[in-house]
Length: 243
Image (tube, rainbow, N blue to C red; front, side, top):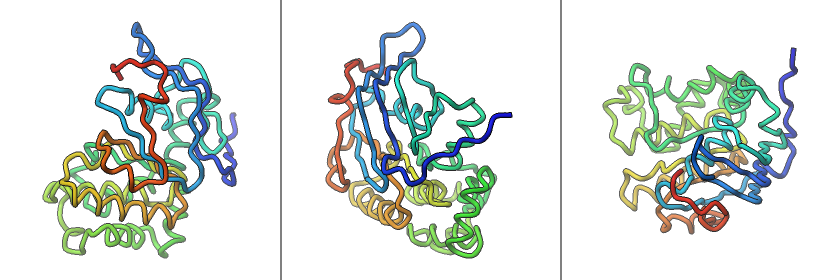
């Protein structure tokens, strides 16, 4: 029986990438990245046009995909050293995702959607309960902080606006204070004012939890809200636009 991975939670580097190479079967490389580091609590904006490999890179950092060669560490844990099941558990414990299409479950309430990570991760359940007394209270605190009012919490998620659904998805990613929050084009359906408001709320909550943030978008106007801006086309030596 293989022991569960024990990341170094004191590690100043949350994400470390060295000599990463990834290609889809039968295709030229999509990603060829010499080095990328994200520090604890750092807020990084990653820009790139559609098809440049942004979502592929996020899948690799999240352990959903595996690299052809090179090293990807999250909290100093080498992802390639883990089995598929271990990577799933590791992702559930330490990484929060905000997806472009939100991926909310229509048969669950707003609060139950937020609580989903706590079902899959005892660690996040414990951290959420420690923050607010119960996981339910923490879900409601996060929703309230992200401008989801009590009357909206009582509705079905399918009755919420796109902007409201986005904030529910963000609360779900944030619950249990994961060390890394990954956001994949989460503001593409919002107008500019709503985008900035949402990002400020998201970053405030991440700062309180000391979570690192990797925020991916093609909207360069948002980059100034972050500690560091990166262009995938500048760090990706593959140079192909098919990811």
